[in-house]
Image (cartoon, rainbow, N blue to C red; front, top):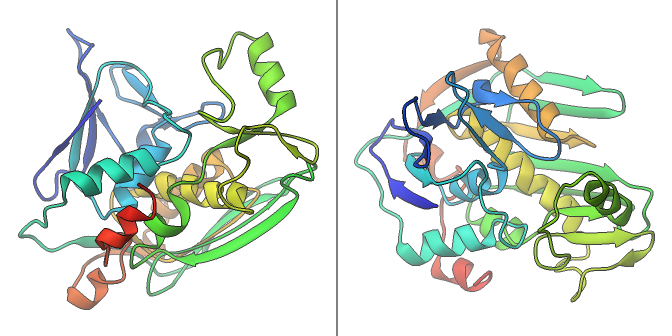
Length: 284
């Protein structure tokens, strides 16, 4: 997979280099998302797909990258260590270039909320992107966790990007029994818990790594809005599908948002603003 720079207003696109004879360009956009278990999958009108895009999308958004062409030679973004840190480290090591064009953002004007049983996701007005997440699992190794972050000033890089996806041992057993995730290695691709035990070698990177990773996922899924968001996201037991439903509900309500051209003060409140070399050293 190769992430290439793109011009202003280009947005984020995936190009399946292994696909010939049909349209191999897939927009990283909320209306290209199709139902998929445990990840976010994008499909274009020709049926060409790419899955597990959420960690890469979070890294792009968290580094303030709004335009890129991603060449990929298969149907799934590499999982790497289960976090966004390898992508972030590569972006910051290579360097970011500021384009000679204003940034446009999606400003939330009215509260929008969706619910599925006990799970809820909401966007409400705020001056910057804030993510507030609450999770609750039976396994004591996770239990009840909640966290709130203002995503400006390198917060994603310092606080969230190294947090890995997690699952229960029972989920791993089910996936293996059904021929799934056979190449996964606990501790290398994900955190695995069983009751009050963390089975992955080395344990957790943060005591609340689970909720931090859910916030990472949320940022990646929100990046599919096509522009950085000025608003507060609240997730309660929410996942990829519910966050996508939230974006679909938002865009069905033109009164609930507007596109704004950011002045310098507004741009400083966006995710990725204020990144410093020290932020890279924290995850390298």
